[in-house]
Amino acid sequence: MKKKKILQRAVTYYRSHMWCSLLVSIFGMIFIIALILLGYMKSKYYQYLLDTTYESEKVMIESVKKNIENQMESFIDLGANIAVEDRLVQEIEDYVQAGKTNQYASKLMRTTLKSTTYGSGSITGVAVIEEDGLLAQFSREEVGTEKVRGIWDENNQDEIISLFQEMKQHNETGLLPRYIIVNGANEHLNVSGRGVLHIAFPIKNGYNYKHMKYMIIVSYYSQPISSLLKQLSQGGKDEFLQGYIENASGKILFHTDENYVDKNAKKIYNSDTNKINLETDVENYGWKLHGVIDKAALESNVNKMYSKAMILYLCAILAVMGIAIFIIKSILKPVSVISTSIDRVKTGDMQGYISIEGTNEIWQLAREYNEMLCSIQEANMKVEEQHGEIIESMKMKRRAEREALESQINAHFICNTLNAINYEAMDNGDFKVSLLLKKLSNILRYTFDQKHQNVYMFQEISWIEQYLFLQKERMGSAFDYEIQFDSDYDNWPCRKLMLQPFVENSILHGLEGVNKGGFIRITGEGYQEYLKIVIEDNGCGMTPEVEQIIKEVLENPLLAKQKGLGIGISNVVTRMRMYYTEDLKIQLETEERKGCKFTMILPEARQ
Image 1 (cartoon, rainbow, N blue to C red):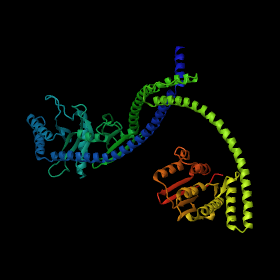
Image 2: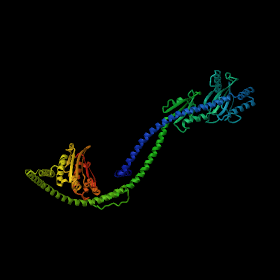
Image 3: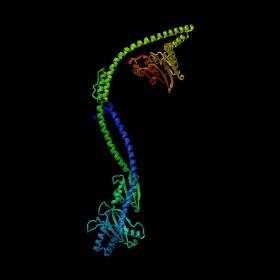
Image 4: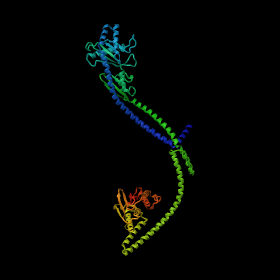
């Protein structure tokens, strides 16, 4: 029952603390990714190790083969030299003639064999064999002096007699080579665990070997060959690598694991599919050298290595989790402080500021929370102010609607009056006055029309042209103007009176004080998917200070009042941005006494 309550508390704590689920999720993903990655890497590493081992074993087995052949050649050269030594042949003949029971002759024969044995450190013993069996022998590991125990005794008499007959028949037929490797490798009778290799050589009878009377068996330590063989298993360090030599009958002569010596190689390896068996012939000796790769042992080694790696990885994850829990709990400690303050705010206590005790992100959040409380207080004050402003704005809106209605009535009255005066002027033959009145009437009708705020560019250009005509008539020869507009863009949508503030700026400010030579040019042409309009003059231009202010207002029209600028340009820029969106581009280029140039890039308007 107690364990169940503890478990319930743990689950409740886990569900109520976000950092727990976050931490478990992160380390769960890390663990899963690690399992996938380690599994993939293990498979790839096993295959890489298998391929690498296979290639290296192929190279190594050839190298070991040559070294074994060189070692065997050395053994054979050494034994052949002993077999043809005249002194040894003479001593054997003297020993036989004196009789085997002659102590002096026996001692002399033993001394000769001892000298021959100690002539090389690789020889462990020498034995002279005749047709009836053992004639004499010496082994450097013989134990005792009274009861000599040599390599050959009554237990292997039949073997050496059979070997003598084989050698005799071999020489009578003239077959080469003139030596026989005896029973491969054997364990030394006097030294446990020490192998020997016997090679039999014929002793000449006169000038030929056809009527051989004696044979000599030279016994060598097999350690040099065993050492060479161990190179196939990296000196015995790699359990998954083995090497062995088998003779023509399939018997294992040498093996990196001595437990396999004298066993049948085919029974051990041919039925095992988990082993890769590389082989090569050891020339002239009827041997086969094998390098064996145990795939199961190799995979087991890889699994052991990756098991250790996984344990270390799990320990590292647990250690990191412990550190992470400590750090996260320290970081999230301020959250409780923020939660307490929020509870106070819920009750209406807007003075529940948090005491900042650190500089990390959580405390920065607490600082921002304090700033939010301050902002809320200021916002409440502004809401009260805005409430009054909204009421006043509604009053102004009603007043504006009334004045707009009155202006429509006044505009209608003014246009009708101008038309009556126009007819009167035409009746009197004053056609210039009639033209001026007609253009003025058109301008007023276009301006006072409240129904159509969105027009087309040909209407706006037509209005500007009439506006400039009247201004030129008013100012005389102070300036001239030119309008060049691509007729393909006549139906490009625009806002009414969009260009007038820029043209008016050129007349009132750019050409201020100019009596003659002023010029205003308006051009409109297609620019990729935009319409490019340029309004430029050759007037007095702007000072750098005024230029900077105008550019700031073009970017943000709300700054006009703050910068002390009239509402003409700021108002039209606001209307244009609402119509063309933020894709609208308006650029100003000006220089004192060199004029002013406004360039507008107009996108397609949103309908």
